[in-house]
Length: 114
Image 1: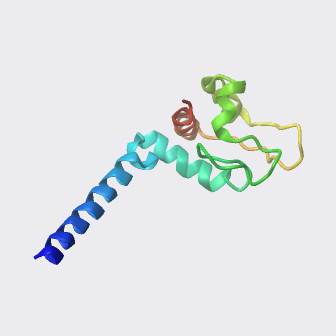
Image 2: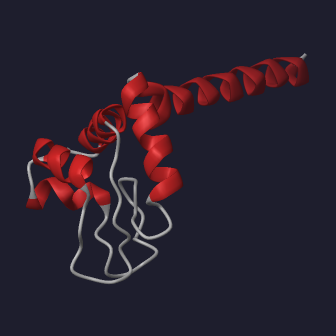
């Protein structure tokens, strides 16, 4: 009987833990545009920049995206993203985003603000 109760308790504990981790997952809590923005930055930016709230950037000189709001209002990045970002170092590629991609990336970057 004790073993059966412990088994039930363990299954309940695992189920509740899974629900808590799902609820705290940033992907689950994000809007569709922010989810698309995350997909974009994961594909195009994560090889150099930290794109989450805790990691270091793989490329030391690439600022973590979670700190961008400290330098610029996130909305002010709309125009450079649409017109093409030019960085002062040769490893940063120049690219231009489509208007819907700009909105999605901005939506994701806003999720990194405190």
